[in-house]
Every structure is written in C-alpha cells, then in structure tokens.
Amino acid sequence: MKDRYSKEIIRFGERVREIRLYRNMIQLDLGEAIGMERSEISKIENGKKNVEFNTMVRLAEALAVELSDFFTPVFKPL
Image (cartoon, rainbow, N blue to C red; front, top):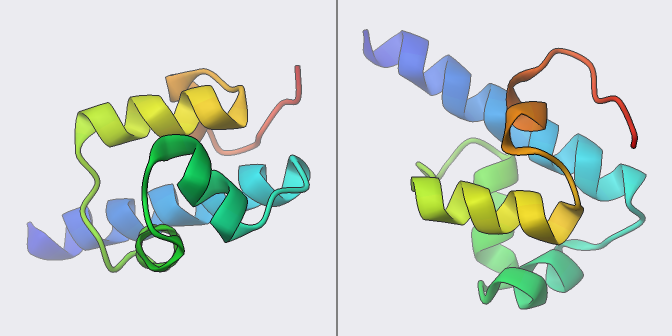
C-alpha cells in the first residue's frame, strides 16, 4: 500500500512541476504565491512531501488550473 501512495505523491509532484514550468514560474514565485518556502515547493515536486488538501487547492489557484488537472495524465492548457 505504501508504494502505491508513494507513486501517487511522486506523480502529483511531477504534475505540479510540469504545470509550473508551463506557466513560466520558478519555484520561488510559486512558493510566494501560496505562502510556502521554495524548498517546500521543491519537496512537493520531488515527491518528498505529502501534500494536504488545502495546499493542493492553493497550488491550483496559483497555477490557474482546476484541482483535477493535477490528476490527469496530460495537462490541457485553458
């Protein structure tokens, strides 16, 4: 079970990075937008941090995407 969740956390972080880069943002910008240190954004993107739901919502708002975009295989720009 733990391996499955670890893979999902890694996949989520990869999607955050993909969308952030698409939005031409650096980790510092994203961190400032949601009130989080750049190092914490790095941990999220590298699958080293379990993300709470409210943080997911703040990430989605800062990146101008729907929450579901973090869980779809291909990001579809608006």
